[in-house]
Length: 369
Image (cartoon, rainbow, N blue to C red):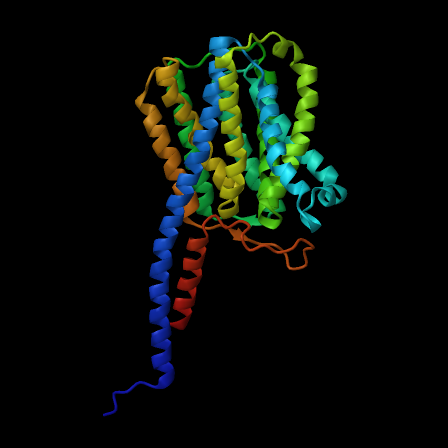
């Protein structure tokens, strides 16, 4: 009895085994990519925490409230580094070429970015910390909607569940703030403050979607250079209009100057690293990851500002991280139409490339079997 297998069967079994081994390898790589995504997201959260702590220290210890001046310094740093880099580039990456072709688009982007930062900070003067923390999450569904229509991202059920879990974690954090006595009404018109938060969150979503589009289709340097250029101009004009009295009343010393420098460095690192993270994930993934920034600020505030601790903060951090991991565990899909005039880029909407490759290998493996 001939026990040998036909050549095609042997080839099919061999191919299936190779694909199986590849799927295992990519599974390990996918897990590493999830860990890498988590680490990158928490690095951004720590940068945001740094800006929050330095701003609060300036406001509480030195009575300095100049958010536009602080943002202006950050935009100046971006201008001095990334915009100057573009000036020495050649061809389509040159600053003058970009300005000639797309100047009005980057003016709108710079305006959205500057006003998003300003509106959120200004909202604290009218509404409560709780309202800002809750309503600021409005930017996530806006971001997902914009990604759906502009970047052609297609979500699965698990992504919506993951977002809901993250928002549940934010709700837990707000509840912990109330129980710990951090709920302080610092304003006199809650409705105006809430509207400012919603507008600021929406503008953040617009800025983040544009950032993802630019860094994946064009370049990180172009995004940062253009934001640095127009952010410097717009924030410079605005601080002269709305903050010149506050700036003139500052009693400068080395401690205040050091806090301004620390804020600017944290913000500069945030702007410099966020495009790198978005290139391998997505704007939605980044925004879910940085929901933990308030919790890091709280942990530092325990020592610096005498905050009261609550076990709900640990629970909140755990819930947010579970939601974030759920979101990153499954790659989103891209449904860009073939007739689109936009150049196709395969990285858009893929939050974890290793997982996407693993998924394709498993589908091919099933087909061979």
